[in-house]
Image 1 (tube, rainbow, N blue to C red):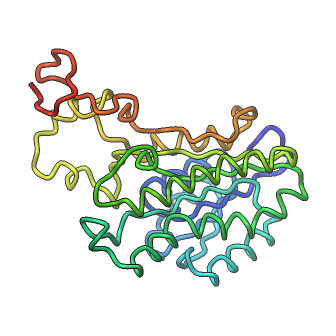
Image 2: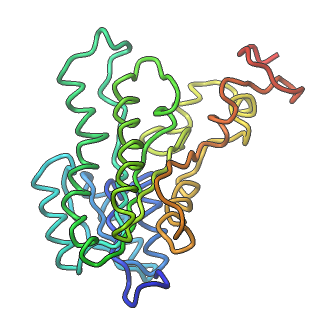
Image 3: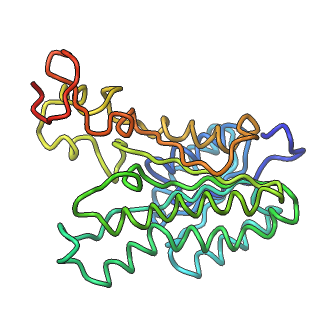
Length: 273
């Protein structure tokens, strides 16, 4: 519970059943918050809610596709019933569907990527924001990606929409600061989740190569991201707004540098020598 509120916070987490979203839901509930968990996967959502309640937390499940207006309406009604959202975590995002190269992609794919990565951020925030403004407080945490800050072949449209999430975060923070509302984002990379499992990312390669790929030498666990979201949503971050925080094990900082085999320094050529 935030020290600046006299009641448990109401925290919305989209895509809140599995992976990063599931960890965020559990983390916020562990702090005493009432979590409004939105997810397309009903079974996973009920399972997450059961975990939360078994641990003494409180969770309300809204089943539906957050890229659809009817789900946004259902979420809005649930938030209104709870007295309005104090925290919004816009977590949903996906790099699929996509073709290997942009020239082979189709407008229908661009549209779906827009819905999955940007439209719902606008729609959910727009629906829940009036209660925050009326209250004069609130926190929004969006989930972008490190791919918004570097080139990613084969996923140009996905990258562009997530760059939009980070730009929206920055501009909205300036707009809402006078209303007592903070807006930040995280930019994950190499998250070991059901959406991007470590086994699939390794694709048979030696896990020891992780020491060459990123400074911290491991994939991120869902809790690694949830802890940063919880910080940004807390009063500990009361003077932080308008930023996208990379949670990436150092991949952006390395910026194309690779650890040499045997930990003999670094190279900007991917020869692992």
